[in-house]
Each structure stands twice: as C-alpha cells, then as structure tokens.
Image (cartoon, rainbow over all chains, first blue to last red; front, side, top):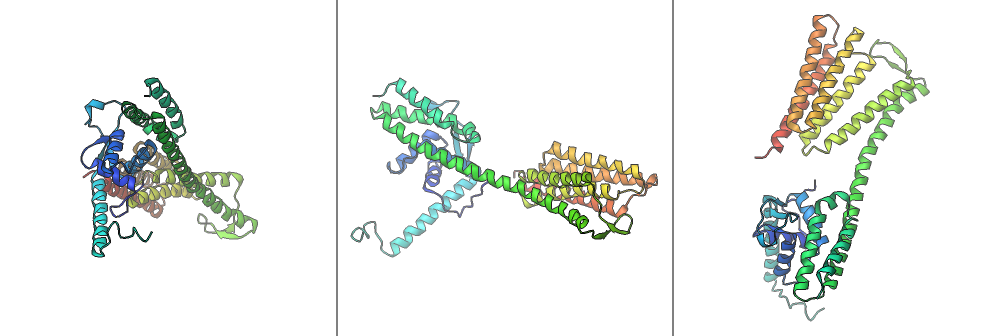
Length: 120
Length: 260
C-alpha cells in the first residue's frame, strides 16, 4: 500500500481534490465541478485524471468511499461519494502551511505577481 | 445542441475506451467514470455548448489515464515477478550445495550418525528439498503481502522457517529415535498449515494458530517421553520456542493493526 506522509508535497490534482472534499463529501462529478469553481476554471480535471488521483488517494488513506448521499438531486446507485480521512486532512493542512510559508518568503523579498513581467 | 442520442453514442464509445483500463481499476471505477462522463456532456448540452469538444477532451484525458494505469500495473507486476523469481534463485543456490559436494566428492559430517561421509543425494532428495524451499519461499511472499508491519512479516518469516526446518530435520535425521514416531510431526505441521490457512495469516487468528502449533508439538514431545520414543528435546524446545515467538509477534502485529 502506498504511503503518504503529511510532509510529502502533493500534486495539484490531489491538492484540489482534498480542498474540494474539505467542506463536504462529494461524488466524482461534484469534485470535478468544485475544483473548476475554486480554481476559477483554470484547472479542469477530466474523468481519467480525477479517478486516477482518487484511486491513489484511497490507497494512500487520504480519502475513502463514503456511504452518505449528500446530493439527492443527482443521486444514483452508481455514484461513489468520497470523504476526507484524518491523514487526508493533515496532508491538506501541511500543504497549505507550505504554501503560506512560500508566500511569506516571497512577501519578505517584496516579490509581487508582476515582479518578473518585464524580465521574461 | 446535441441530442440525447449523441450523448448515448459518446457514452457507448466511452464505455469501450474504459475497457482498456486494467481489470481491477475498471471494476472499481468504470461505472462512476461513465456516469461522470454523462454528467459532463449533459451539462454542456444544457448550456448549448459544443458537446463534441468536451467529449474529445474527456476521451484524451481518459486515454492518458489508461496509459498511466497500465504502466503502473505493469511495473507492479514485474516487481512481484522479481520477488517470486528470487526464490527460484534461492532454491537453485540451496540445491547447488549438495550438487557441488557430490561433484567434487567433498565429505561432510553427518549430524545423525556423527560420522564423516560423502554426500549422496538421489533425484528424489533434490526434488523434495527443491519443492520444500521453493514452497516455503512462495508461501512467505504470499503471506508477507498481507503483512503491514515488521512484526507481522517477522512472524510470518519465523513460522515459515520453523515449518521448513521441522520437515527438513525430520527427513534428514528424524526428531525421534524410533522411526515411525516421527510421523507424529505431520500433525504438528497440519495444525500450523490449517491454522494459517483459516487465519489467512491475519495477525489475531494466526497468533492463535501458532500457539496451537506449539501446543501440538509439546503434546508430541510428551507422548514421545511417556512411551520412550526418544524425542530430541533440544530440537523440540527450539521449534516450540519458534512457534511461540511467531505467535507473540502475530499478537503484537494484531495490537498495532486493530482500530483504536
């Protein structure tokens, strides 16, 4: 079984899936839509990427299948809902801390989003 | 706007594409993936957007996933094959020892008689020992795939080694001086094998199986002593200790793996 420690950096897909599941349990399509919304449409995950990532995340213990049905309007026997596990929540928190630390370093050095605009 | 018929057709094609995934992945995710694909197309159709482009994008994304999952499975299978293959090499190495001793006529002390003599193995000896070593190795590999902790692996390893050693010693010199009495050790192995099979090497039940095996061997020794069959007490004590240690390690593994 693959092991993921809370210190291992996460791929963008895994990070966004964890974020999408941090508020409620969702099925595959629900995750896909939430990721698209939260990234302002910049990250569009197809079914291959989504379920490949989910499979690895289940194996790593970051998420698990849930029995709950939280979207009765779209409910269907075939839909699998996913929920965050404790290690998944820890991995998300660790990754967000890492991002905050990187942003803090950039702020200390007065690096702004436009800092390299002229140099590239 | 795409019709339901178009969406059904794309969905059918998508179902065909999903067959290219490895079977375990397909069995787990094919249906929800197909459902997600349909949701995706329906949403685009409801918004009067080009479904064909969305379908093509989903096909490309899924195709990349198929390549990734098949590659992962291929690498994992090769790794498993190597793990099993190494026991073939170990078996060959073990059998090479008597073969070389025989080829170069090198004399070794016989632990049974105490005399020094040349090694003389027949084809059946090579076959039996080969099957024993290879079988023990494969059993260990199979069981260790279910082991999540070092204690669990150690428990499996000790149990397999104890079983292999017991058979080997019995075949080579016998655990009791009176020959038919050695057949009683078949019962000991029977308890170990049946117990492990019922437990499927799961720690809690496997620990009970190992303690039962130790108990069975202790009973055999007691029978040997009562009826004067000449049990080899030091060897018996060694094997009983091995079963008990294996049982304790299984128990430790069960404590660590049980939910809090």
